[in-house]
Amino acid sequence: MTAEQRKILAVMLVPMFMSLLSVSIVNVILPDMQRSIGASNSAIQWVLSGYTLAFGVLLVAAGRAGDLFGRGRLFIIGVSVFALGSLISGLSPDPLVLNIARVVMGLGSGLLSPQGVGMLQQYFHGKVRGRAFGMFGTIVGVSVGIGPVLGGGLIAVLGEEWGWRSAFLINVPIALAAIILGRFWLPKSAWVGTDSESDTEPESDTESEPHDRQRADFDPVGLVLLAVGTLLIMLPFLERSAGAWIYALVPVGAVVIWLWVRWENRYSRRGGSPMVDMQLFRTRSFAYGASLTSMYFVGMPGIWVIVALYLQNGLGFSALHAGLVGLPSALLSALAAQAAGRVVLTFGRKMVVLGVGIGLAGVVASALLVLAHEAWGISIWWLLLTLGITGLGQGMAISPNQTLTLAEVPVDYAGSSGGVMQTGQRVGTAIGIAIVTAVFFIVQPMAGYGAAIVAGFGFIALVIVFAGIIGLVDLARGRKKTQPRSEYTHS
Image 1 (spheres, rainbow, N blue to C red):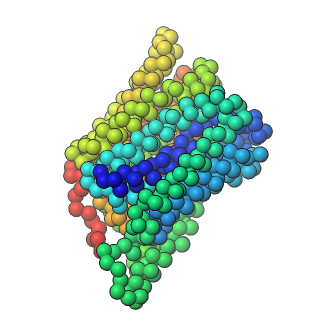
Image 2: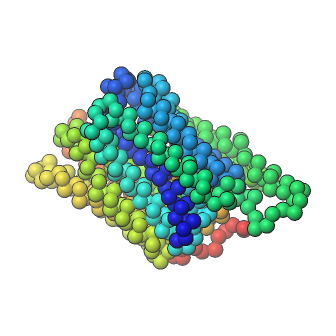
Image 3: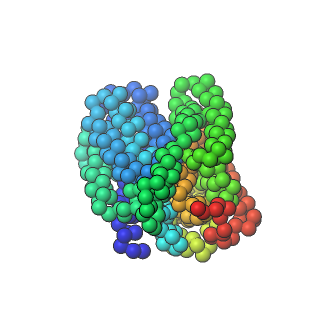
């Protein structure tokens, strides 16, 4: 890995870590935040929902904007917006200001995240790309596990009032450093769109005009249709308190997504440059890999919600102690992602399937442990081991899958394809957490907290089985080479 590549990773990964950390850290600080600013339950819910919705809705459009106008430019804008939202969140005097600030943070995250994936595609190749995605997987794993611990620690050290505020304010100096370093460390090619990149400069203004026109082709209709469709599908799962009627928005959102697909195909046939080229989904590695990661995220993120509910509400653990249970999982996920990134091109999709299988084994072992704790009093702290196995599997599955999924995607669509994958993850997470918590709360009054978490683990295990089947089907269809010939024609 060259010195320039190390600088790109340093600039890119830290803000991406912050944006993911801002999802996991909030769960722990919510009670103190609610007491501090006098927020109702519905108002505080939007601290979570507003961020997630803004994050998910913007990903694909932001990725395509980075492809067209320069990933470095969109990355710095995203970090700046994220920092502004963090500052306002940390100083918020009331729930309304806090919720607006969290939406701003989500917009910033949505802008910066696909640029990171796009730059991994643009500046890293072969085994080095696998290692870079391994580092990306490391920050995903660590952000999930360290968030609750960091949030609980800040409250323990700084107190109820400034503990939760510092969880947001800590982002500001880190973001400012990333902006400064990004301005000097990102290469010049990161500041222009891939459509205008060339080994030679155009000889005249006339020659540059086609590039300019192509770069300006942002497909606004496609942007609006996808954003509205994603919003309609995600909203019911994030705002369940509105009542059963809100789920009627899901089929409406599906129809809008169908219209978006039709529009993108039509736009491409008419000679336009669509926000997402539907030919991406004819590339088997991308279609199977994106489906696998979306299904996987329907299951796995819900683990930490039901574990926290069980430990804190059922067993009386503090927020800090409940957060510590996930720490080994985060560390093993980070280590596994690093190791897998080095050998993913050797083992290919087999490693992804093995990782999904290990993750499934960890979920089943966790369910059996809870049953043993409820029946015979076996220490619940053995969850450190069983959830650690789950983290090990996640590190082996997610980062290698991302490397393989994007292996055949042209650089011109690296940002938008990364946005598609991350949108699938965000939508999958919203749907999965809604279902697994619904299962938990249905079972708990009838059979207790132990049965509730076991039922939740059962749903998660079922979803992971489906993710594994997708990987096995891909494997059976002959996906044994890491980089087979793309169905795209590069121009």
